[in-house]
Image 1 (cartoon, rainbow, N blue to C red):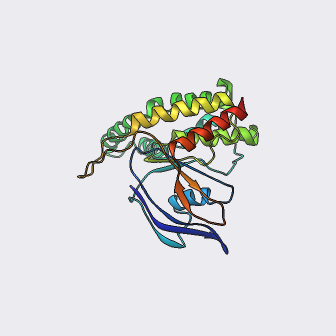
Image 2 (image 1 turned 135 degrees about the horizontal axis):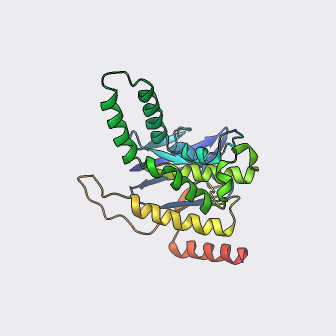
Image 3 (image 1 turned 90 degrees about the vertical axis):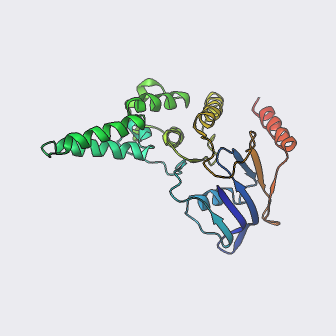
Length: 252
């Protein structure tokens, strides 16, 4: 659970928002809307631990695995498919441990250790990691031949798509998407929407809390107001539907 209690954030002397008070529970889907400069990205930076509130308090469970779309457009020589798989740091750590243990095979307990590591590798989905990464790339518009191309070979817009695929590859407790549809065409946007619905349905476990809660099945929306009032308020479902209809009309 994420708890925001009367949170305020400033950037220099400017107050981005204040009075943000709400709680988010496991399995909830939340959208944040607002004008440019109303603090949407700063709120996500707060969750990632990159910012501290200037007022109020923010609490979240320790060791929460968070995935987010990197804003850095890396120009590396790494193959695109391997770059996407790098989004699962636990899997990569297991692979390195297997390689290290295999190199030290003369050790007396190496066999037992390898057995344990391969069990973890199986549980982490290691054997189908490359096919999963390939499906993510394909859904975001990449061709099969793109899997072996280096990241450096892609334009900035396609590197953004690689960053999105890398974030989706992460087996996270919390997925943060800051304007993920930038540089995506309509087909990729529709695929991403379907993937998110499927992923949330497949990975949301029952609550382990002793207090059972009936969580809402529909997403919640929060709107950041202009800098003049600097407050946050929930959006009604009707308001959200009107905004979606206007956006679809403009895209048509």
